[in-house]
Length: 212
Image (cartoon, rainbow, N blue to C red; front, top):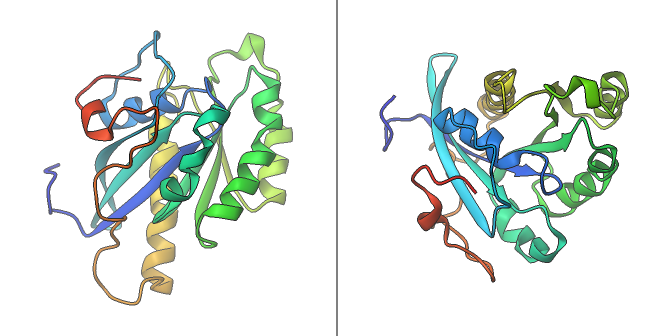
């Protein structure tokens, strides 16, 4: 679908979670249908866009990805500003990344808009033989905290499309029914294409197929 201004809504969605859970590969799988086994930790911030159809409307998703390491935490408020959705990602084969979901959720509640739509994502579902987080346990946690839940694999692409379609559809239905914004204009994330943190690589430099 043509990019540019050919869209009815523009939604900013952020990816959060520990480093190494596969956030960058979820982003590249959804927006470019690419997966990079040698994916390095993201430094700073990058984002990519993709448009989908929801109820006959064109919804353009601007998906932001950042490093999960503690030393980049200073970007939080700028990173979350204007976000209407968040994918909170953990690795089903690394229990510690699931334990940390609670901390990430608190950060979201502290910094993001109170109406943000949150989906808990158990990534790397292809590693069934190494599973350390039972699906039922994560599902129960999501229900308790009012989150939607899905397990994905950026490696074999299972449920990646579904995860983004679901959260974008949920956002669209909330926005179109409740009219969260005062005007009828398409919802726009903050002006400016990127934010820079130090040390960082500007988002505009990271676009163009290079996976971080």
